[in-house]
Image 1 (cartoon, helix red, strand yellow):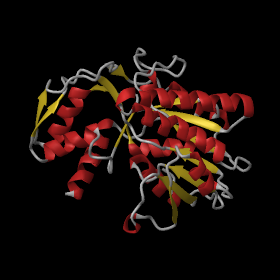
Image 2 (tube, rainbow, N blue to C red):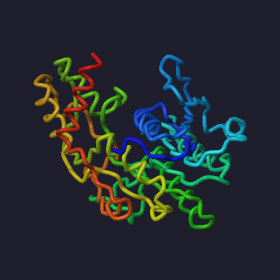
Image 3 (cartoon, rainbow, N blue to C red):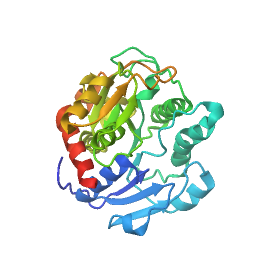
Length: 312
């Protein structure tokens, strides 16, 4: 990645900036000279805040509160990572998930001062594809299977409509499985790493799913490539490594690198409606953004494992 980019202190609003991807983007934005403000739902303790970053604590699904916080503020760039991954069914809390991901995005669009807005980067999800056949490509009709993926799809369609009708400057990045240092411990790869580092027996599925994992540094790089790319505006763009691998092989690779751990394959059921082959066609990213993954899977896993070892 570039070290410094003279942006004359352009103002960047990062929604969900205290999460895994958001923290990595924030650190890179500071290196590049952006003036960064972060919106997060949870209060960030002073001891954990980064110097030079403005922290705004607000639930973006509450429009009146969001309007009050953003009133009078001008941002040149917005990156929307708001919300969290939650595959709850609609009647088990999924309605709230929808509000955060769709209503929150709509509220952002409504409350932002759009006069000086150069670019709005929406971070979507490969889950929007649902049961579409692999390799998934951007021309396929989305087929969401949860309130989370439905909300992401609805937000995608809203933003594309706004681009078509009012030239709202949105780029919709659709990452596949992102991993790397600092990821939440309840995510797949961190769980496997921790289980192996502890030399535990731990349950996993049979692992026949084919997936595409993309290292965090590659995600950060493509976000900044998208900020001033007018050719990409209005587009949905898959972001992935292009390397498909089975879940079982990921587990075995992690176990081999660490040299410990005893995964118990077949003890976790597949998710209802889970797509067994979810990996991306990344031709559009190469064409429009001149981007492709630079970190291969083995190197990314080693970097991630070393980071978790350092945390212990």
